[in-house]
Image 1 (cartoon, rainbow over the protein chains, first blue to last red):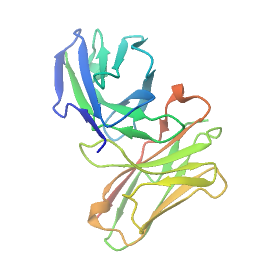
Image 2 (tube, each protein chain N blue to C red; image 1 turned 180 degrees about the vertical axis):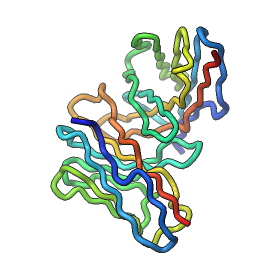
Image 3 (cartoon, rainbow over the protein chains, first blue to last red; image 1 turned 120 degrees about the vertical axis):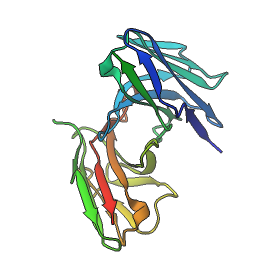
Image 4 (cartoon, helix red, strand yellow; image 1 turned 30 degrees about the horizontal axis):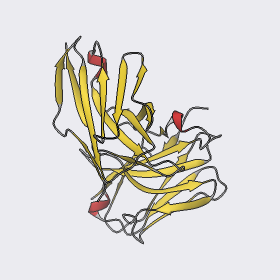
Length: 112
Length: 115
């Protein structure tokens, strides 16, 4: 069956360090992979999207990599700040304007 | 445009009662999605619309759940004969099919508590 796995344990890092979150998937052939941020009691907020034929995408302090051979995406936040503390969700899009399927999310805590 | 609006933000209901939630998407978005999220989990897909047509329903969506988007604008999600297992955050999102790079825009959700 299709599965999207994110580290269910919270990730605690020191302010200023780089946070790296992992998204692994099985039995999927995504055309796109998306990353969202979710704060408690709020809906997810779209951060960025990477296509299957792209290896890396950057946006300000964010960097995403996508390895379709390993079936894995890594999400990096450089120079992390306490305001980056949130849950981060990866989501797979099979393309063809179908629905997006979400992982369980990883909670990031940036310690001042 | 103020984004995706959901109403109400919170709903407490007794088991067995019917509830209805409303979602107003971004006006130029023709796709509208409903997801359900429980604590510690990611959003689970329920159903989606392209304009007024309901294109897919999850197997999670039992016969007690129904969704409509009558004029291709706002949408409603109704749960009949609520059960305690229906307690969750119900999220609505919209998107522009023309550009997947923009992702989905979510509302703040309706938190349902069934007592």
